[in-house]
Amino acid sequence: MRGKMSLYIKKGDTVKVTAGNDRGKTGKVITVNPELGTVVVEKVHTVKKHTKPNNTNPTGGIVEKNLPISVSNVLLFCKNCNRGVRVGFRFLDDGSKVRYCKKCNEVIE
Ligand SMILES: [Zn+2]
Image 1 (cartoon, rainbow, N blue to C red):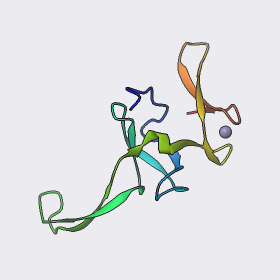
Image 2: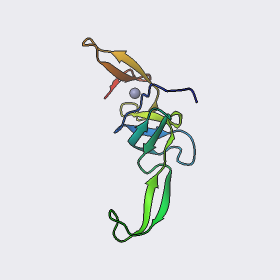
Image 3: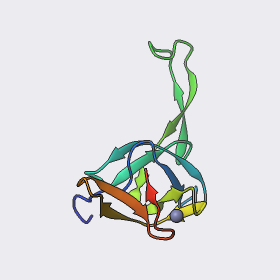
């Protein structure tokens, strides 16, 4: 590992998967782990788990669980470019740090 990364991916982002079994898929980021450099993306790297009935799931059965993937295997999805892109950081006049698409130069919220 390269140590703690400054992650350019945030919770709620739409990302495109660039490696692994789910390559090409896009999904929403559910959680980010900056310590491990991993993200959990909706419907990506899912496993089916059989569960016994419990409080949260009274009937039990099969639940789909998302496993974390390395942040290096995803790219932020740029709506403008309609593809996964590399992003850079830029400071606005008010000092706030924003991300921008290195392809089209648009700020990504
Ligand atoms: Zn773009």
